[in-house]
Amino acid sequence: MAKKQPGVFRKKVPNERIFGIPREVRVHRLVSEIQAQGAPFTANFLNYERGMFSTFLDMEHLEGRPVKVSEQVEIGKLIGTVERRTRLFLQRSSCDDAADFFDTAWRSKRYDVLSIVNGFIRWSGIPFRGFETIASDLAQSIDAQKLLVQQSDRVLSHLDPFPKNFIRRDGQIFLIDWGESYVGRAGFDAGCFLMVMLRHYNVRDFEAAAGQFLHSYLSAADIEPTGRLVASINRIFLPRSLWSLLRPDVVGRVHAKGTRIEWLAKFDLLSRAVSGELWRDLKIGLADRTR
Image 1 (tube, helix red, strand yellow):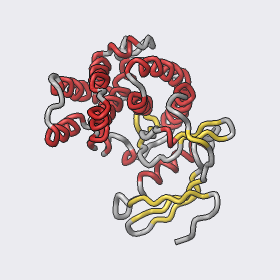
Image 2 (cartoon, rainbow, N blue to C red):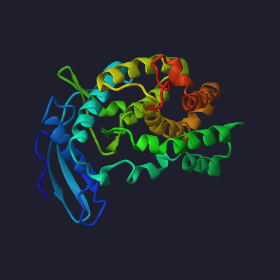
Image 3 (cartoon, rainbow, N blue to C red):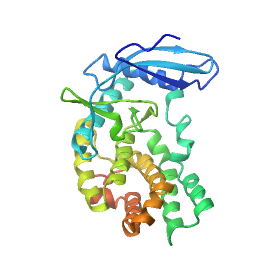
């Protein structure tokens, strides 16, 4: 195996199939084709070496400072720009179905409300009165809108937009580490970053920041805020936020710091997202239409 070269980030990923190319390699090939048609938005994919059990990816190593969650306007612009560019590319190009979110990822625990809830109850019990009703509403909403989401525009979805993966360099923000990425749907990364924001902010500050983020995202993505987009945002925002709120370390901090009231308010916010009230309160026109 060749040694790592200066200026190169080498990453090891498991082979998913005996003779297949790992999904992350396929995604980076797609990214390379898209970046060749415009300004870069991530590190350049240089090469890969496939072994029997693992594959090594060589990526351009980008130096820069991590972006803060509070820089949500610029993050919204980048996420929207990536979606717009990949949407236009995928509309005129064939797509590898094995890299599609609905091929495998939708079954994983982080995106399955009932799996998240049952796992928590099994170890910790029911955390508060009404919890099971909220969980049932979230699961039913996602199931009811599955076909609507699947029929939405395909885009490249990063699905891991935490601050550590946004790098500012020479006045531009880049989104790195596409290890969790899939061919997703318009709105998936917006929903995922809203989860990140809900972890970072209290409910009042979240709503103010989320409105700024979504306005920036919608403008850059050049898409209408329809009910279909809401369904796609909720498809990621609801289970990922629930998973985050029920993490053992998060629950432990809630008890240690006495922040149970704020914690419960975040579950109420998820219910408002299901009903559409949250999106209407953000005054961006979401949930007003269902096409």
